Length: 394
Image (cartoon, rainbow, N blue to C red; front, side):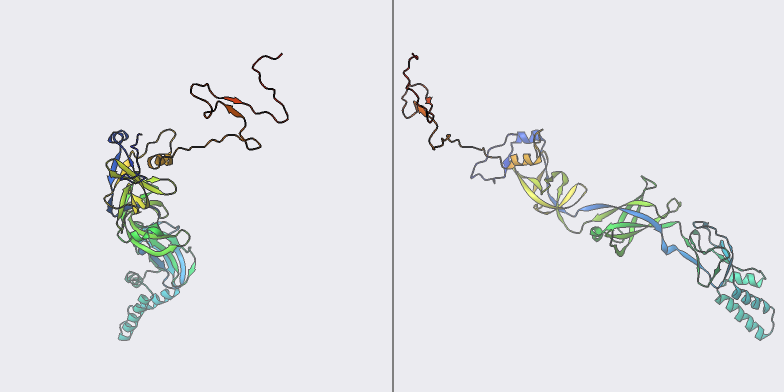
């Protein structure tokens, strides 16, 4: 990549480089204008299905007695509204019914008043109009407890033959047609979620099946262990295919609350120490700039500091990466080319500090046309060197 050299006093800063249009075209360089806006994000969190407790119905004993018969044998049995659940033998009811029946044919005014009081007593004991009519017709046996709603027996706390006291919970019926989905929301994301936030739900048991819904409530309690808050979502279950305890993935559409410059993700350069972008200053001039980023979504990232709206950044072709260059090296070549290193050379010194040997024909004592300099070795200590005669030894 050929760069135009920069000189001191030029209009651009020391970190600015200039790239010719031909190089830009060869690199396929693209740019994008920074816009300011609110980042809309999608949050994916886990969730678990549970019973809708607002539709739960408790069936309890209205008086002391013994469960002579239990028509529901096991939890999670399906029941219909009006279906018999259990038969309770209650001495207090039996005596009240016997008194009412004894006064049924009374003719006197006092007897009719007693009969009315006996009837009122049956109602106070919890007998329905149908049960009172059955008692009036002479139907014997205990009190039949019936299902007030259709659903599933989610809890069965008694057994046949068990003695129970008034107010004892016998069983609980939950509506299977509507469930709760409790989604765990990280504490840092709670600010963007509230009632009405749209969600898309995918139950793990049915991959690819997406159910739309919305948040009904954000429970005011944070789990200290997971640091999450529960978002409650009502989920219809018309076919009964969903069950409490199933896990699901919840996607929530979160709208931001603050406007920030938004930079394309592909324009960001992460070095592990900082994040930066390459600015397009126009006329082929490029310059790196460090930025502080926030959250990311949809291919864009919030810029908290370092950029402003309207600036242009390079989104493609901002690096020339070859087989031997990494990201940091490319940026260094684009910003501050290294200066050549020059190592000075010094002559070797003898132990006395004088130059080791003398040179004949040095530039100071050699005239034009003379041959190359010849080095004469220095004599070794303790040895006498004979003078050279230029002839052969005798």
